[in-house]
Image (tube, rainbow, N blue to C red; front, side):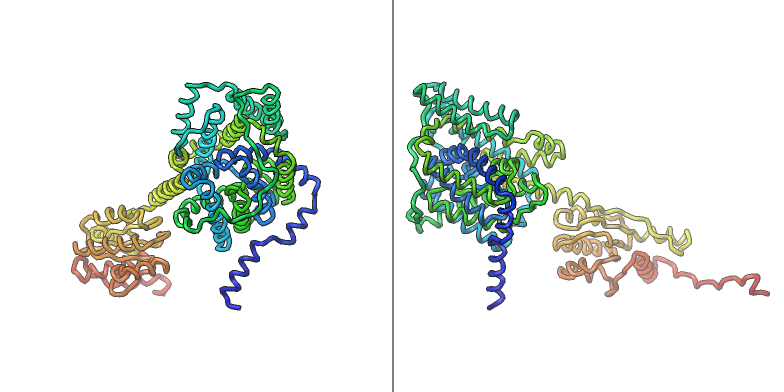
Amino acid sequence: MTSAVRAVRGRLVAVLPRRADLVDMRRDPRRDLLAGLTVAVVALPLALGFGVSSGLGAEAGLATAVVAGAFAALFGGSNLQVSGPTGAMTVVLVPIVGEYGPTGVLTVGLMAGVLLVALALSRAGRYMRYIPAPVVEGFTLGIACVIGLQQIPNALGVPKPAGDQVLVVTWRAVEEFAQSPNWTAVGFAVAVAAVMLAGARWRPTVPFSILAVIAATVVAQVAHLDGAKPIGDLPSGLPVPSLSFLDLGSLGSLAAPAVAVTALAALESLLSASVADGMTVGQQHDPDRELFGQGLANIAAPLFGGVPATGAIARTAVNVRTGASSRLASLTHAAILTVIVFAAAPLVSRIPLAALAGVLLATAVRMVEVGSLKAMAKATRSDALILVLTAAATLALDLVYAVVIGLAVAGALALRAVAKQARFDEVPLDRGDHSAEEHALLAQHIVAYRIDGPLFFAAAHRFLLELTEVADVRVVILRMSRVTTMDATGALVLKDAVRRLRRRGITVLASGIRPGQRQVLESVGALDLLCRDGREYATTPEAIRAARDHLETAGLLPALPAPQPAAPTEEALR
């Protein structure tokens, strides 16, 4: 067996389920079963609502919650994660449905699943931890706004206008409502949202979403309200797995949407798993296993007509708060939703769309953590700017572009802050054993500069400007022992600065060059310029002595007098 095959096998074994997972599920099954039941009750209206919002219908949301929820629970890297359709993914899917239709969404989900498995096997999960907090907060705020705006047509009881831009669609829906108001739909949406928001503050553990939806459905059926349009017929069961939707000829054009869905699924799932870890003691998710589980979930869900899935922060939080301790809770949630699909499809089909819109409006409001936003805004101006730009890009563009923009701005601001740490200061010469007169003469011809911090591309050109403006002296000594890092750009700029000084007749010496700096300086040809006559100076006093020797040779300094013998002591004279 070759080393490559052994490496792939080892990575595959690392992401597969373990015996410890089964042991954990046997530890406290009663609490896990109760938590799974609670999560299923909360997840039902969300799955229906996100399925409708995605454009594939409520049945697609239910299929996703069942299939993806089960696969992610079995193969994922978190004991507490609950997966299914989410608002963030819905935001990405709407334009895909508009351009490629339902089959395009199913194909994209399958492709994203394969890409997620590839990311897991390449151990890419650990890199997700480097996403800055302001990007995550801005991303979440933008998603909440988009989810809320997407519900406006159903909340107003008007057909969804054509278009992909959520702001444009919302405005058209408002215009249509103004021409023909549907106050029944508005009443249902507002009532359900109000009950959920008030109930969450009063009794957080009670599933007010399902209670509000049931009440709205009963009222709509008893009162025969015309303005309460129902979901419509649902199949009584999951469809037979099929690949009939797959069009191999369209794979090329769907590559970009698939990458976008993959990035979002990875980001949201790992973020949700991290949130679950933070809410518990002793739980720690495996990011690569989590990507693997989400990959299998997204491969399986399209086969049953489901949309792409991710870890769901809200449902995961409910799972943790209700006492879940193992994967059994997530599996129970999927099993109960399966029973609902088979046994209660006719009842579920009567739920008013406006009631589901109210559920999602309340969900969007609860996604916004005002305290976190205030903390980010007050932290630094850079954090506030990153947050606002990411949120605005999420609203105006799409989620992947928003994250890319947020990361780019965060990276640029971080580099700017690091570059500002680089300092270039003149330091006084050490008097050593020189007399006051000799020291003053040396100071006329020799100047020493200390470089502190990183010397890399973001700070290099400022350094070049300062160094080349050195006054008319004969020798410049660069103290480099405090340079923390140096890249090729910094070394090239240093080389250019030394050449400019030499053209002015100024000799440049360096002291304290570290081994890591030597490699970079040598690679661009700057080391020879800094080490005059092939000599390196470990300390600044050595460089100063070499500079004095150079000035003596040039006739600019008198030769040092021969050392005088010490006067004999009184004891020696005796």
